[in-house]
Image 1 (tube, rainbow, N blue to C red):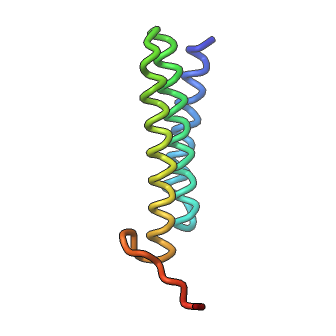
Image 2 (cartoon, rainbow, N blue to C red):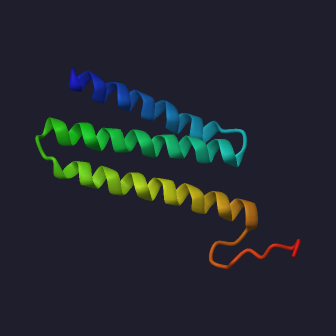
Length: 92
C-alpha cells in the first residue's frame, strides 16, 4: 500500500515539474514549485515510515517550513524587486 502511495507521489511530482516548466506566467511556475515542495515533504514522510525512521518526520517539517518561507521570499522579490529592505508606504 505504501509503495503504491510512493509511486503515486512520484507521478504527481513528475507532472508538477512538467507544469513548472511549461507555466505561462512566473506565478504559475512558483505555484508549481510550491506544490512540488509539498509533494517532496510527503515523500520524505512516507520514506521515513517505510524505513521505520521517525526522525525523517523532523526533516519533513523543516523542509516544509523552508518551502513556505522560500515561496514568500520569491513572491516578495517579484512584487517589490527587493528582499532585504523595508518597504515604505507611500500613502503616509
